[in-house]
Image (cartoon, rainbow, N blue to C red; front, side, top):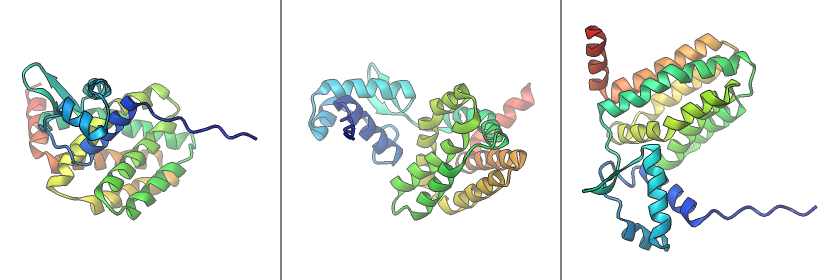
Length: 222
């Protein structure tokens, strides 16, 4: 049987993934300018794939295009963190609840948790963390719900990267991940959903306490 060769990624896709990786691992920091000519030289490509990659990243919310400032890595503040994590709080626990109730396999989540524990650097741990959360919601049985969470996945990772740079809290979150997975594997859909909600909420409250204060203020005005 003839094996199918692995497709070679396009120059644009390669540049896109590499810039994204650098942003989400903190090599490119919020507010940092992304100059087409410099990036093209670094990657050994023309400016065209760099330009296309930056347009795509702007669409996902990781970079900002300005007529005056050019392209920069998106800044992370309390408002941005609250917007992104509000979406996660509304959708992710429900998606996990559905995954558990339908008896979906969570082997991918268990594997991601192991990779996070075995990670030797921030980049590996960050990627495993993202894969863990995605493995909880993808098998929920509602592809649209999964795609909606995928839409904010990169922005959530950017918030996390900034928060971890200021206050590494990997071990605490790893313990919370283990408890979420334990409840899910035990078939406790509601318990797993509650634990996931608390995990997401506590992270943004610790990292951006002003976001929680502002949210409470808005609730009081309604």
